[in-house]
Length: 126
Image 1 (cartoon, rainbow, N blue to C red):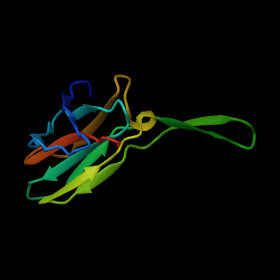
Image 2: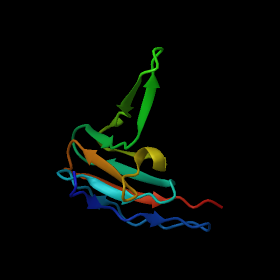
Image 3: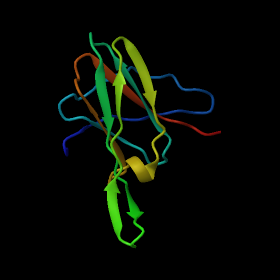
Image 4: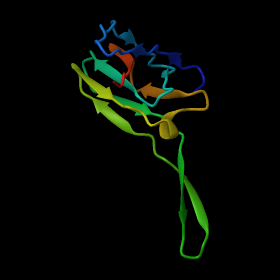
């Protein structure tokens, strides 16, 4: 998709960071968030009555060379993870070479956006 809604990462700091409230996700178009350092993580909270699936878009490929010397290129599969109702899960960090699109964003999609919130944190390294 090309119309993902941007989530703004919260930059953590050495003395600690007060986390802002999570934002409602875009269940229709998905979300994107900047991952310039490869240290972004996302917390997804499922406040819905049922399980949702979260999918992270990968951008990488890998090549397999057969015994006859021919090479076949495969796309790395997009991970699909279930988030149980009334729970929060944290995902990441996201390797830039595997998850960043051409604009340096990670793309995430949801099977439903109803009662689902997320926040992105750029992890500080001391």
